[in-house]
Image (cartoon, rainbow, N blue to C red; front, side):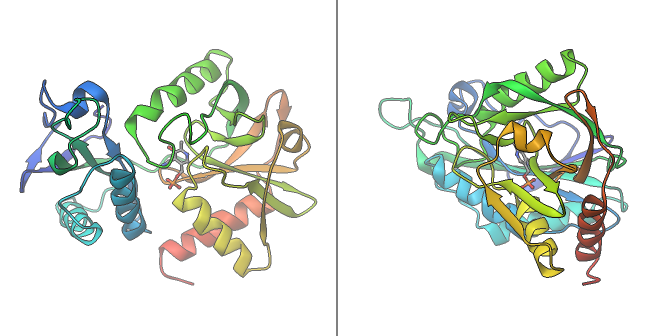
Length: 285
Ligand code: PMP
């Protein structure tokens, strides 16, 4: 989907303007959904943790059974070259890998046919307005049910129906539960709660993305005396929270200002997490 105002794509050794066609009609990845991707962001002239996003792309490709021809360092260098082609706008940076060919038996990818493209879209950072969160009726698959260890495009239709359901109910996003009924994450971010000054977030159990922003925020809060506890959290824990905030590459730290029918204020820990992240991103720590 082209959502940016300007798009530049690295493909087969060159930069191309616009929403470049990159998938062949007979590509294995087109047919059977083996595409993995990652998302990094430039805002206010900085691109925090770009290296980690590139490392995760390679890990996702390996989990998908692909043999990337590029290293994480090479992907990062291409991303930096692409960022320099823009004029300081906020950017969404999306490296992608997929299989062109199938292995014998056709369903598994031919690892060596792994193909790479990197798309950068000019995309302003959204304002930090709070958002309204509900609870999804759709669950997260366990690692023995889906390839949850990869950031794979084929996982996202489940997230898409979570968002669509939430929007139909008048909300922006939804908490989703794992197969055991514990909160996993939202359809597009990780989730944190604060109660009596104590910060908690779901413990990674393979059912959701252990986000790069999540891990960054945990480290930053821990450094200033707000250790974040990873725990098996229920919806009732979120109902009892003083603050709820979400983390993810695209918007960084977003306060939740309504959870189900309850209004919430953006609280002091959320504000501190956001301020710390900005300081980190700008190299002020
Ligand atoms: N969960 C999901 C489903 C996501 O799509 C994202 C965004 N990549 C996140 C969590 C947050 O991860 P990160 O902080 O690494 O962007």
